[in-house]
Length: 292
Ligand code: MN
Image (tube, rainbow, N blue to C red; front, side, top):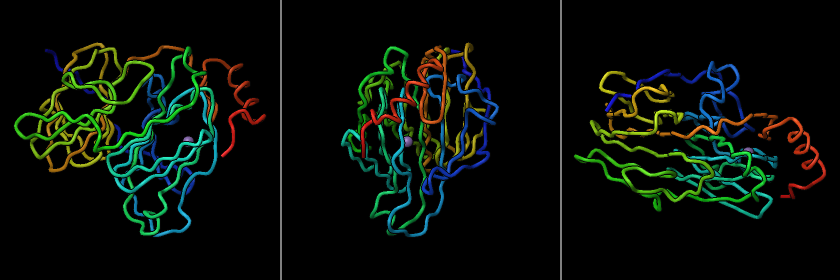
């Protein structure tokens, strides 16, 4: 067993507002120094560290907008998020829950703070990943999976170290409930102070984690504070360990087999060619994505 080494640790950088509801920093892509394909199939990693929202009615959010050719995976850590889309899906998630929306051939959706939560306001923290779809699956009909924390596959760690919520892939042989279009592992690792966990992924899988709360020691040597993004090297060792240096440490773990396909992104569309982007724009403009 060789240690898989850290390639980079990234602090939150510039922030952008998505609508008036999501105060996010990007760990990959434009101006971050990490090219999107470096984390393929995860092509956008937006993180909203804890941010205090005052009470508001109606709730803050992002109104109807399209997506095509990929999936959005939204995870709430504090606060509540409501989703609705042109296929008639509605979902509300709270702390520890996730929404996995496959935009596929095209969809419109809106993303808001949940109405009752917004009336009270409070600390809000979330992550949204954009997960690319393989070329052969980009025209799959849009659909939606709710993943509630209390229904997730939970793998208990040794020595009362905590537990791993498996969203996708499997940890120590126990599979998560989400259906994915390419091999990937997505977990929330919940550690008690001094709790430890070991991870072993194929070393060509692009692998990273975000320290959502608490603090982490990686491979017994590198300390990583909360809100930081950690990207691992490829091609070296395949095993790494994490140990919580603080109570209630939560880590979002991501590892995926790269698709290694051409990536053409234009706003909310993620395709393989410019021609497909043009088609997506035409389809959206002609109303083929439906209505909310
Ligand atoms: Mn969206």
